[in-house]
Image 1 (cartoon, rainbow, N blue to C red):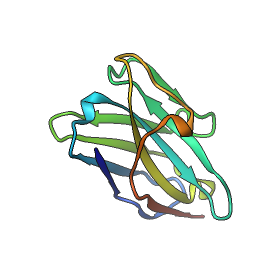
Image 2 (image 1 turned 135 degrees about the vertical axis):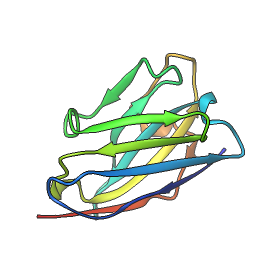
Image 3 (image 1 turned 90 degrees about the vertical axis):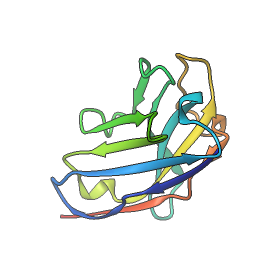
Image 4 (image 1 turned 60 degrees about the horizontal axis):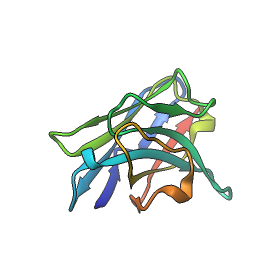
Length: 125
């Protein structure tokens, strides 16, 4: 499967933004999905992950209550809704996918087999 992240851009603190992850060459319903982000000069870090069933979702503490992961199987896409954005959310955001059991999700970066190219989100104060 190939993943294409999009929807990043410039936002102000407190704004909302939704970024998308379009899948091709495979169906997103077959994969657990994760979102990661990378700050300038830092390692990539986990943001959120969900299982194929949607019943198991993991959020990092830094985004819990502000970000929401979702997917649309008809559109073959995943989404990350980001609310109450903060300047410290400024990063390149990556979507990732891995074959998984129905109710399995993972926070672990190296357990993901497929990665999108990243989309930059910049939040100004």
